[in-house]
Amino acid sequence: MRVLQRVNESRKLGLDFTQFGWNADEYLKTGISMPEGAMDDIRHHYDAVYLGAFGDPRVPDMKHAADILLGMRFQLDLYVNYRPVKLLNPRLSPLRGDRKIDMVIFRENTEGAYVGMGGNFKRGTPDEIAVQEDISSRRGVERIIRYAFEFAKKTKRKSVCMSDKNNVMRFGGDLWLRTFEEVAKEYPEIEHFHMYVDALAMQMVRAPEMFDVIVTNNMFGDIVTDLGAALQGGLGVAASGNIHPGRVSLFEPIHGSAPKYAGKDVANPIGAILTAAMMLEYLGSQAEAEMIERAVVAAIDAGETTHDLGGSLGTKAAGEAIEKRL
Image 1 (spheres, rainbow, N blue to C red):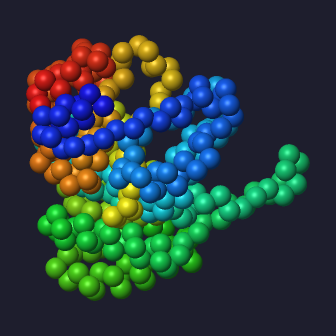
Image 2: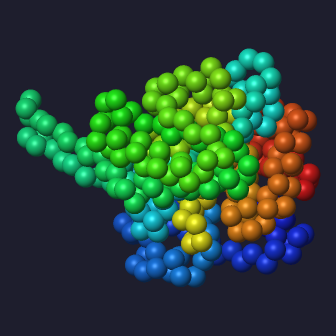
């Protein structure tokens, strides 16, 4: 927020911020995750939501986090999960050598195994059966694939890879592959190829330079984006957006709340700062977003980072190292 306020004031962006105190303390006192009517308020009165990390061990079933985060994804129809995987400094990657790592992963965000369809039969007995259904609609699949191609076209990226597991998940996989091939015909200038998700995971490590844009379903996207984060330096540097183009959208660092580090001044602020930059980009302030990324890169290059990136600074000092470069 300090970085956002600094840029907002210096560049006269005219951003107004409203802070909602919907944290775990409040939930434990009231049992309410979000006030009644809050989602409609967000939908009609705001342009973007900048989200802090959720997860508190005092709420073991994670209901508070699920109500807000998944609630927003589904109720606001934030069907694009946008995860850039960009190596900001070669020393941050676990891969040897000077590797080109600059890909974008789009994960379908509102369908798949995350819709909660299924159930348990004979729960708690030796004969228990669990069913978890994976849901794909033609509309949902087509819009995320089309978004990936449009992004590639707009940003002049050369290829789009669609990843699934249709040799095993035949029905949903067939829908994804057929839709991918049909949409690709509308973008003949963009190379397109398909890869099973296990092969994708292998090639992301073996040859990350072969990927520009990747599009996949909710479950596989959840997994390979964390692999991507590891390639770029860890969860502490990874930003993400949950987007519905042209509508209020949600931006959050992906690293979670890490309760064991709370109050110790050791957590890496870069993921949160780059997420703020991503939000500015979505709101039309491209130059300011690039300015923030340059400040982050300069701090990393100077070694002014938290311990996970090889520096010796605490959270506050690492944030200030970036802020002063603005």
